[in-house]
Image 1 (cartoon, rainbow, N blue to C red):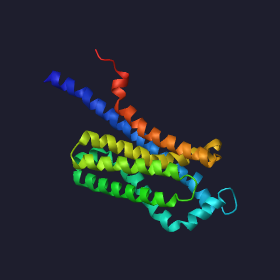
Image 2: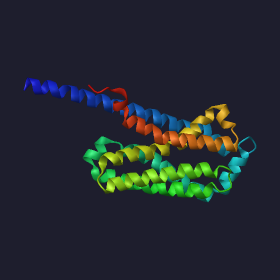
Image 3: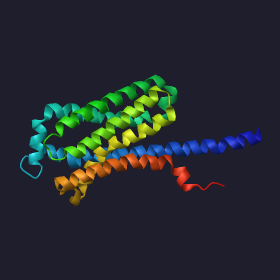
Image 4: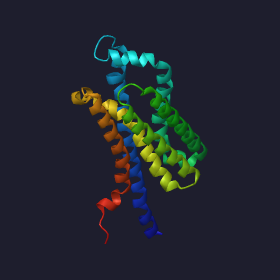
Length: 216
């Protein structure tokens, strides 16, 4: 019995450490997401004559499309982390599935409306790549969940949420003057690179053990 207790203890300690690391990770992402509201979103909405005036005017012109896009994007941003909660998944499986469906519908609506909003703004190709990757990853996450391929479902869900968070990441980069002053051509390329990076980074995480551990 003493041997068994000793063997179990490291597992519990490791699990607690993993939970704490995950919590810190989500807190950092949450702070990043909240920081864009006062520093990027509000200034755009109140800037009537400054450098954001043209962009602001376009937003108000497209407000009837922008509202469902923003609402569904925010829904995906908020419900996504809840999909990664082991506690919800293990103790409230029905809630996990409901939130999963909400996330999927939110992504499909937000991405679909984005494809309409992008017409004529000069960065259509970048939006096609970003929205297309968002839809495909989310669809793959949904299908693997429906087919009970849970390991693959988690991987595709991770890729999907990584693309979801690019919308925060892109705005967070507005703090960098060089990013804010890019031409349309440069911005198109940057969005595509950010999207590819979002798709690639989860695969590095999935393979981290293999990348850092040598077989005996």
